[in-house]
Image (cartoon, rainbow, N blue to C red):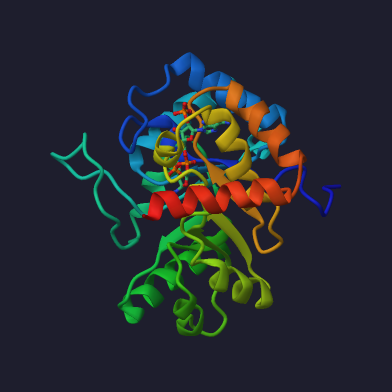
Length: 270
Ligand SMILES: NC(=O)c1ccc[n+]([C@@H]2O[C@H](COP(=O)([O-])OP(=O)(O)OC[C@H]3O[C@@H](n4cnc5c(N)ncnc54)[C@H](OP(=O)(O)O)[C@@H]3O)[C@@H](O)[C@H]2O)c1
């Protein structure tokens, strides 16, 4: 039986598999396989995929690794391949009947652990996507449904009986605004996913010095918070998996480390 307390809050971010968004060059296929294997070996089960390129890459890795399907928890968002724009990152588009089969084929799986719907201002359109997700869930093709880039005000716009059990939003020392969303979501019984602990890694560069030291502190800023259930972090190297697990185990920041984070955020904002 699965323990109620997860081994780790860490989940692998899908941007690990693509060159865009600061990950140039992308990790070699062998490194991607080592990375995913290291995650599964250390109890990191959630693996996020936002763009279709990430789903294709992860599907290839999972095919190579031949791990039991139940070891990983696969997440997919509504960002799809657009003909003629295969090498760019398209914006999100509404789910339709054809969307889930595409995601499953790209990931080489027959179900998703978490289907993420990107939030939108058009609540009638969002409700149609939620209805579709409910039907997929009832058919056993989707285990959970999440609201991505969620905002606090979205929680009051969800339809009665909605299937949303997770909210996902960027949340880190530099962008802490999702705290109110996470608090309210948890009060309503939902789980929370904090994304981008290092703002795509760019803020590690801006802070300067040893990236491993700043990464360890910024990661713990997120993982030690009770309002956060899962943290999606991108990693192109298998060695970051153990490093990040070790950081997480060290728990809350000391007063000195908290002061350091304040100094970094003030400096980068200024
Ligand atoms: N922010 C958003 O709007 C958004 C939207 C949808 C989904 N997401 C999800 O959130 C995930 C994570 O966010 P992100 O990709 O923006 O970036 P991030 O996780 O904040 O930062 C990733 C960078 O951190 C570096 N890193 C990781 N562990 C490290 C360590 N121990 N020491 C030093 N450097 C380390 C990686 O370096 P290397 O390159 O050397 O590995 C990588 O470049 C995404 O992959 C995606 O799944 C985010």
